[in-house]
Image 1: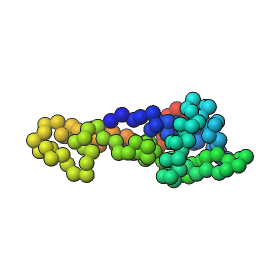
Image 2: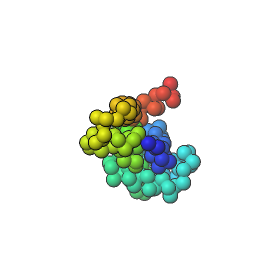
Image 3: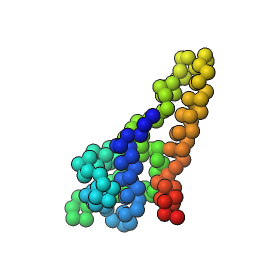
Image 4: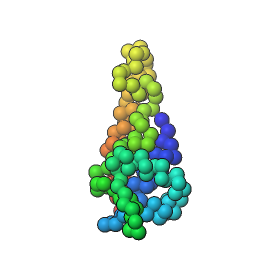
Length: 136
């Protein structure tokens, strides 16, 4: 399991909105500049986040993007999964059913535990948690 640049940049985008939106919309070019991400590349990421109702946009002079809910209501897992899909350490834990070799595989309990730990961290860490850790 590797979180790609797209997933990492989606998280950066959402954190930037959390910091700078206040009561206003934040311009994409401002986020791109602060986060050192190509504006064109960011447009693709924002499109996915918008379709998933994670952000909303407004056009015009005062337009831009803002979160649809408070930073404490977003888990890192939900944001990354929007861009990356499900996160699993091995193919053994990526299906809806247990691995067909699970009962004979001595490693399978480790993969299940690792899968659970990864997803627990992603799902139990909010944007606000990241902000609090970095600004307090």
